[in-house]
Image (tube, rainbow over all chains, first blue to last red; front, side, top):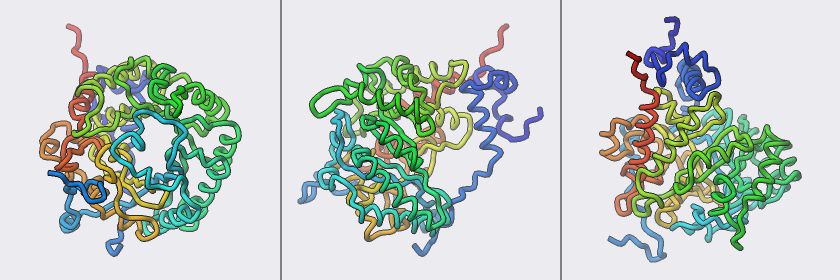
Length: 56
Length: 399
């Protein structure tokens, strides 16, 4: 399996479809959900707004 | 036990969190990023379920009809101060009410200009949205909103019958025709401004018919809102009804060959069930970064608290005396950023905690004990999440 995001490894099937089958249904709710997961997994989850000032 | 004060307003219930203890444990708030400005406190409609005027909270009676230029300027300065202090590159401002478009094109333009330029001096850009009932969306207004890059969310409750059952003028006339005229203009001539639709669920209506009626103007997003309530003022329909209603919408939405629109609650639940991070503060265990500023400059937590005791959403802070950093240490704001530390024992034992997150904060309220309770929509959310999980489960291979 080519995927390395770590997300798809936990999602071998969604609604009875394999990841490859979902890719064959571009634009469906489930395929879009999968794309969002992949995008999120590829990004940092660090909050860019964490500079809390303790003196405030 | 009565907790009414001499002024007739209920004393605060126990806070959901102890902020000093949280800080001792190492918890730190994250900065606010969404500022909801009540630029108008009155409305030209009289919807029967309105959270501002038709529930226990009477804040609107104590408000000026409009946010004054001085209050607007001070609010903008506070947002800029917050952005500068935390190095925010972007903030979101929602013009809200009442009906914010009662300010007219000039009033809206002035508000946007004041905030945008003041915040820009702090090195941050401002994204604007206006949440409107849609009755005042004419060409002149939309030209102004386009000029100032203000996106538009419109409240619509389905087809004419569903919408006019609740969203009426003070004289009792349905508002559907006026809203649809504005929506057609928005979606047809200003599609770049169209942010989406807000639909309050009436469980007595057919869910698929409501969903399909909302597709007519091709909204990029539909936000189904559960009627606001809590354990002392439960929703109109029995527990479970709303979960089944949204499950029916899920099936219709997810079975379309191509995704027709984003349905916010379903998108976030689906994403969270699949292991992703929710962007919605009432799905998943999240940190809310939203704050409400009333027309008089007082700082409030969230409109969803308005079904509770009068003044429950009021933080006691205002933009003239207090910074938003001070606001973040208010127990109500801290509770929304404290994650599991603000949840009830029942929620902490729930196997769906990571998806549900305890539900909308205002829906957790139990008179006498406060906000450390499961949401009054607990049964509904568990039903809906279970439905989504079953739909996602791999089907058995044919034998």
